[in-house]
Length: 199
Image 1: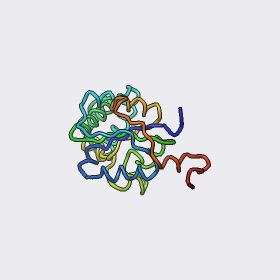
Image 2: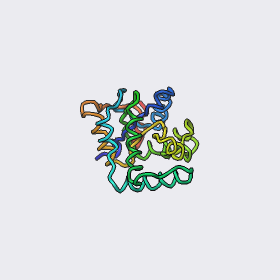
Image 3: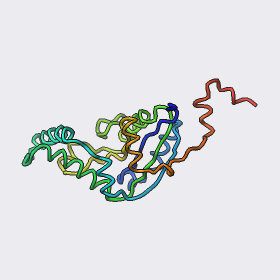
Image 4: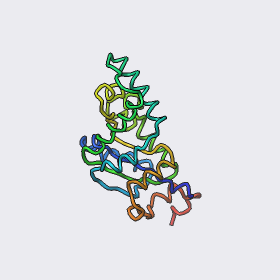
């Protein structure tokens, strides 16, 4: 596959939509030179969200153990099997992601997955670097969301790996919704000799 055609999924979550950050988020990706090839706004249905956030028992157990530790540290009871706390994370995310409109996008370009992850920042806003979307625009933390038994409000979902991006894009977009078009700036970004500038 042509490296300049790598694609990744980005979803502006309900908190990002409600805080009117769609334009700011899009602007940050556009400024890098990535190309927007698909965009739609809708309320996500639970079935699609469960498919998107499918996690195995090992993931649920690891996250559940961390949640149980956070609950104990906060003086809260741990009154169910730790794996259920991990499953509760997915339940909370599905509930949150289906509570209102989201904006789903597909971005394309060289190293699109890694570049988007760098711009978005760490999944926990509290530890995201200044200059990232999560670091600049939200103050939530895993500890607070765990104590309140809700999903962390971190504004944006982005794919972690190219293979995951391919799987996720297939959940949210059909092939005919992803546009294949030429953008003038691609000549500057990818033309080897920049020999197409002068007339």
